[in-house]
Image (cartoon, rainbow over all chains, first blue to last red; front, side, top):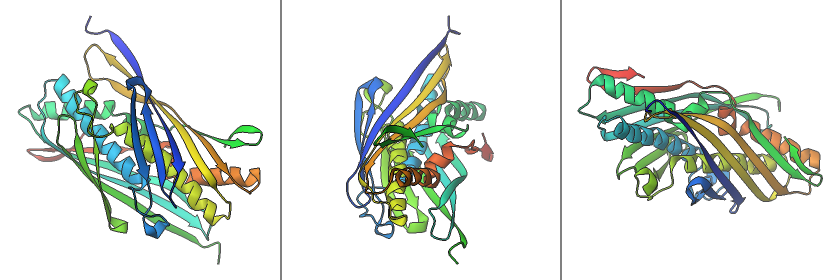
Length: 162
Length: 162
């Protein structure tokens, strides 16, 4: 029965509250595991903040790198492909454009990972491991497709889709 | 000359090194600002880790919430739309599917934000602020389109695209 298909869902919830000048305190919950994490973002003085926490894109970058590394390690065990001294370098590149003093509009430019690890496995197996890790990484697969992100604003007349 | 177009680029770089059982220590740099941040991810015991840091998707969730909150606050100042008591709740939903003991493949399901703030501005201005914040949020705009994420593996013959 080793070809049985199985499915699971992962939901993360979070609530951020503005605290300092630009600081946001963010409570993240993983209800499926009963886990909860206290995180925060801030901006440096150049952007009007106090630099008490990393900026949002630093958390994004670390989360993305951690995601691919975790899948390489988890799937390495599952496929019996040894992984030693894993190190991953990444570059996240965006651009933004604005007219006069209008708020800028942003867009992605490119995302890349350089992956290194030692292994007694063949080069073919090492490549196969990166391939499956990529397909298993939730952030990787999210960026690969176009997503609808929903935004609702609370108004005097109730929640409004924006 | 208030309709002059201007552009800028944002690059974040990171390097993660596997340390504990599932822990990754990740150094994130924002070269354009000369800033550097030490972050980490881990998994709970259920996934073979020691729970010494949040899992990657918790950093992703907090980064995404922080991104939209930061743009609401920054653009609120720029547009003279007051923002008080900002709070943002979010839900990030993924699914995964596997055959037998094969590594699973993951996919996004949906992402949503519920945004609340007090303001002396009109409802129309509050809605406009959320609209521009969405377009200015780098993570939001990244998820909105299909991206090519590059992965290179270091082999005995040099770097190989995977």
